[in-house]
Image (cartoon, rainbow, N blue to C red; front, side, top):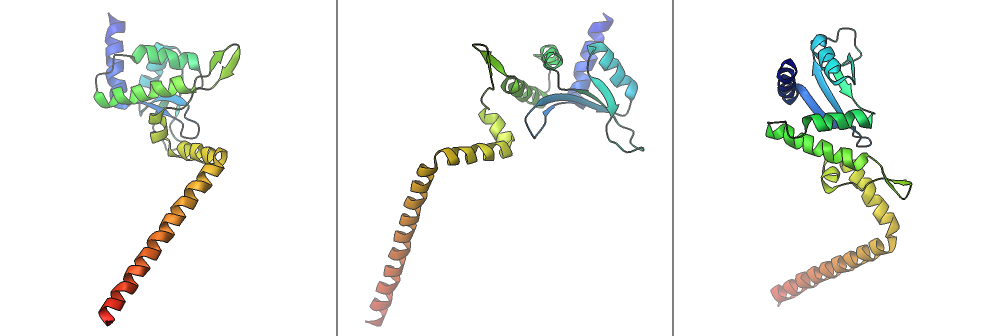
Length: 178
């Protein structure tokens, strides 16, 4: 009975203070809870039996502590199973759903004994514009001829438009002079 009460309390606490997030540099998912009371975070760590509690910032006068779970797929998967379907707040549900999609995308899969990375989703590209820009650069590099042709067509159309405007101005001037 005590465990069920603690689980319910923990879910509500995570909805208010927890964060399902990712590293912006590579999209690696992790989970954090930030709080001034270290004892609460130690109790959460003892409940899950993984993760670490450390200072939130490096300053000596910093009072905030952080419970962090990252780098270990097994621990991240346990968190995923624990919170799946239990979150009530819509915003936290959406954050969790996105976090799970990142987890799926970043976890390498094995096909015929070879490891392959999964393709990034559209939602990941929306939230990680730097990665999207890099993907566009790679596409342009691989499709250089198409890009050059597209630019050439755009420039020709632009030049035709400018010439048309000049002709219209000349015609207007001639009609005013006549």
